[in-house]
Length: 96
View 1 (cartoon, rainbow, N blue to C red):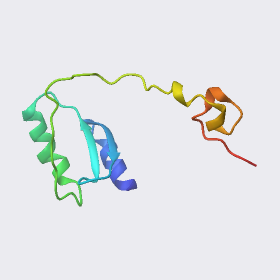
View 2 (cartoon, helix red, strand yellow; view 1 turned 90 degrees about the vertical axis):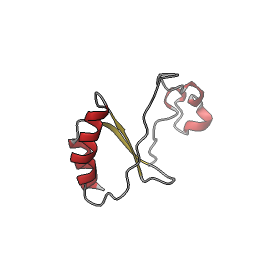
View 3 (cartoon, rainbow, N blue to C red; view 1 turned 180 degrees about the vertical axis):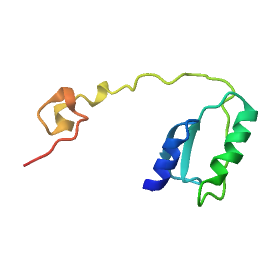
View 4 (tube, helix red, strand yellow; view 1 turned 120 degrees about the vertical axis):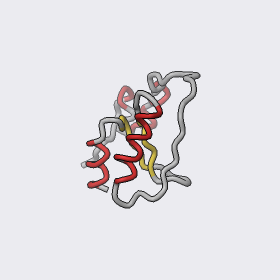
């Protein structure tokens, strides 16, 4: 996994990568100017990664709702934090 992480971090077209559940093992967010550049990236980079056997591509046709700020306000609760600090309820707290 460490080697794969290094390989993916070296690919400038990959702007984010996730280990996922389901049919696929990984989800990559790739940004290229056009389909010709995607074909080049696929054949010259992704398909040359060791151990990769099956690659499925999906393309965004149109943005319906852009990514925004994560709505974390509901996490502000002293009952959930266990740290005694409601404003950091999502922070990992260490005991002892």
